[in-house]
Amino acid sequence: MTFFASFCLPARRQATHPLTHHSTIPPIRLMLKNDIDAAIKQAMLAKDKVRLTALRSIKSQIMLAETAEGASAAGLTPEAELKLLNKAAKQRRDAAAIYKEQFRSELEENELAELAIIEEFLPAQLSEADLVEKLVHIIQRVGATGPSDLGKVMGVAARELSGQADGKRISDALSHLLNNTNL
Image (cartoon, rainbow, N blue to C red; front, side):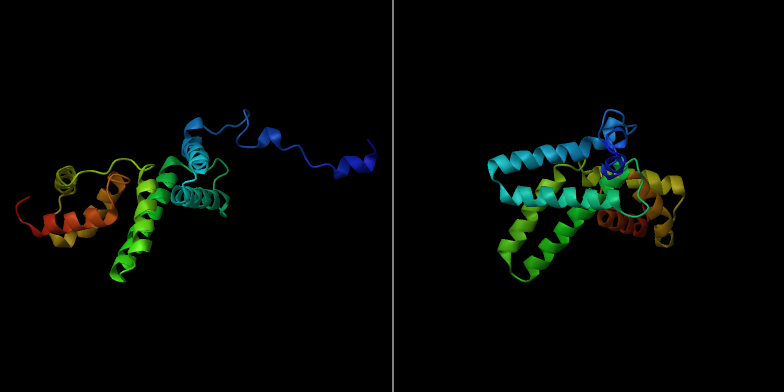
């Protein structure tokens, strides 16, 4: 190999690539991405276009978040992945509601189908009774006495119930509980 040719060859990046065996990234962090890749392959084999579209959308959002400016070199944390999935689910819910208002049932059904696919990767949501029970404990722990304490309680509840309940559900339940004097 000539001196000039050695400069033209691409640098060996294998040893520092995050998916190689030399990686310092814990395997748990790659689980969501691997699950989505496997689901994409299955959807391609089954020729399921709606599922494939939803899965590719999730993968795209994950890849954008991983390559965004200021993103960690170690990849997304499980909390960040959960946040992305919740955001994607919320977008589908909002779009379905808009399509329903405009009597566009075909588009609404498509959004709801994509929402169901996204929800497969989310942890199970709390039932209404479990949500209220946990919120009552949080309200008592924080010492909230009325609707004026909603912001204080909402911050704690959103952190503790992240991924287990949608922010709107938490907010609505908290408003009802704080307006009710029988805690």
